[in-house]
Length: 194
Image (cartoon, rainbow, N blue to C red):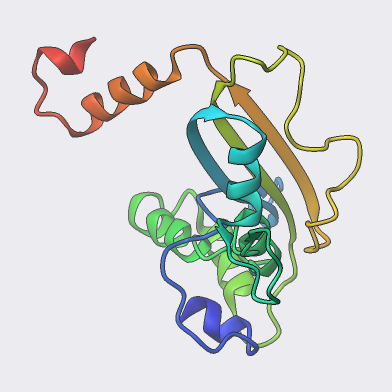
């Protein structure tokens, strides 16, 4: 409902928080929200060019125009970021948390979020899109080699907002993820302490 009420061109419900995995707020000295950063985080055990293409451009499908080569379906991260609202879905959740945990301390921020979230005549705020690509490198990848273009805005990015893309390559990242899940979801046994 959040997305449908803010984008009349969308005619179907939106499941999940595509493009808004995380959100950060910039708040001025008066407590007014002046900007948001929101984005998508993707983990892959190994990043190589075909993996990045599948994540960013969508899975490969048979060419609907009858070509012999498979093409990307266009439903990857770029698609989701491009159609994401300038007001991230999670802003209402952040406001609810502030109301519950610190209503006096963040009264001005809560009011500011009310104005940003209004359906009629909302306060405008800037948005920066951030894409985090985290995981391991392919064996052939050089230490300073980036998989996404960083000198210029990629042609697939059409949202027109500020864009930041960060590739984080971790050695033994799979073990790090396993340890994080153990700490979050295990019953606190010995495995969770590693």
